[in-house]
Length: 293
Ligand code: GRG
Image (cartoon, rainbow, N blue to C red; front, side, top):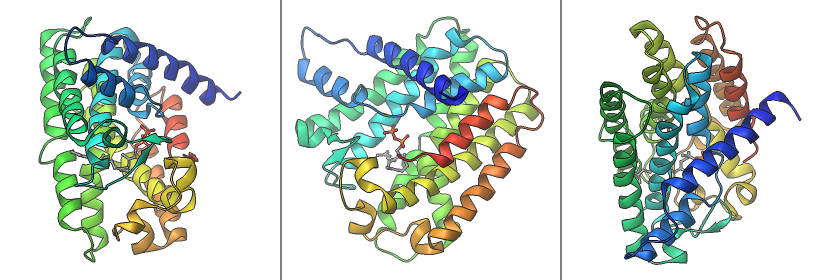
């Protein structure tokens, strides 16, 4: 097994164990909410966002234990966004991570509430995370709320809905994805910077790394959506095709999309130049653009 595969496997396990502890299995009341939340949260997933936070902290020689809770709550936010994105009023997907989507397995109402709960409890857990000063927690909360709000993930999703079925140019698609997908990936890296107290210049380089690798990740997602939808989603046809969405493939074609993803990868790596231990993040970025699912 390669060093990167071993790193991904051990950190995936660490994150899985921690996520399992964050949401209780049994609850006095509202049991269906906890069943649906655990079904969605613990049902697979690469855990790339928390892994990015941990790898950034390790690159900066920070404390992995202090980073574990903030890293994991990003997976709660990610899961909320996927549940809502799969709803009939949005992408209307029946399968996610090879399983029925939450609204198909439970109900639409419970899927909405499960997403709402994950979003809300993520902030509660972050506010109470151990090994971090109150000042750092406020910085993390402030950054996260901005990155997933109207100027970030939610804004990107609103653009996605508004532009559905319309012809858009590359610049608009870039903005859409920088917000919808890239913002949370960038936050994962920035979280590492806040936890380790980096200076403004270092923080800016981390942000650039996150933005470039986030966009590259989305392009690869578009490519995988048409080339291996069955492996990636457990469904045979791309929902982007069904929903007639503009993607990097429809705008640039497959080959140029691959070239563009590589360009963004190179920019991301260049942003890490000032960090002496960037080896690990470089390998992770490489994994993100060469993934098969
Ligand atoms: C509903 C507010 C709201 C936002 C939804 C991120 C998002 C916005 C929707 C997800 C739609 C989607 C599939 C985008 C493509 C990029 C992406 C986020 C892929 C899924 O992430 P992975 O590959 O998934 O990390 P796993 O399953 O490994 O966690």
